[in-house]
Image (tube, rainbow, N blue to C red; front, side):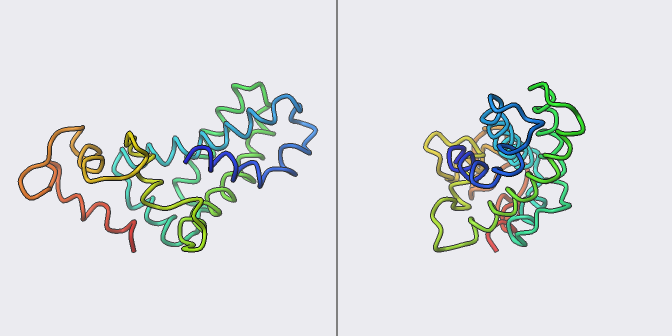
Amino acid sequence: MIENLNELVRENVQESVVNNSAIPNEKNEAVIQAASGSIFDTLKDQLFNGNVGGLAEIFNTGKAEGSAVTQQAAGNFTDKLAGLGINAETAKGLAASIIPVILGKLTQKTADPNDSSFNIKDVLGSLAGGADGKLDIGDVIGMFNGGGQAQAGGAASSGGIMDKLKGLFN
């Protein structure tokens, strides 16, 4: 997934990053990596912290702009850019222009049955850390009970898994 996310960022940042005089050319690739890494890390954080509703909101509506998920990803991106030596004003401007667009395109691609670059189940599997990059019930159970085993009937000890995930598959 991260390779596809890097490519999605690369396809959409020509003007914002590559043609930006405030970003040294030798840092273009690092900025692309920071953007995709920030999005991936934020989605993973949201999933592991149980904010399935926030993820469902952006994946079901396709509207990332203004969401808490987008704001967190933009903050993470700004922090990573600061680590690359990019000034705060430029970093905030890039975050505001890049992150909502990329998250919006990601959610559109997961919803498009004719686009196989991103599949919601594979995205969730990648975020869940499945060894094969695919989401299976063991990965889901592990997310909700700290890696423990399921109780009888397939429910994790923390509650109904399907109740927590059903919003993502509408």
